[in-house]
Image (cartoon, rainbow, N blue to C red; front, top):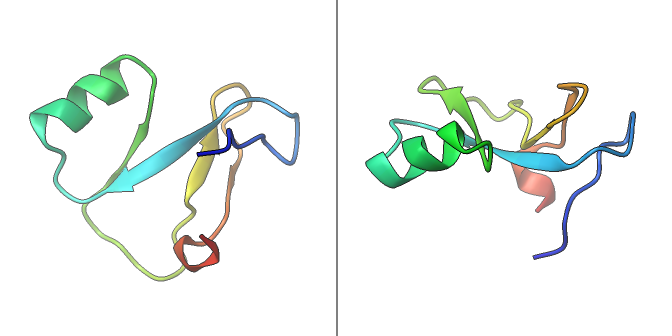
Length: 63
């Protein structure tokens, strides 16, 4: 998978994971590898968050 870059600052894009996290996903979030997006999901939720500036972007359908 190609590394995503923030459209605002060029920082590293982290995937936002929605739903109840598994223990593995929770550990990834603690290490800063993914962002937990919560349990309520809509078709307008962003797919990525910048590790640096916290900007969010991208709809899940664009992947």
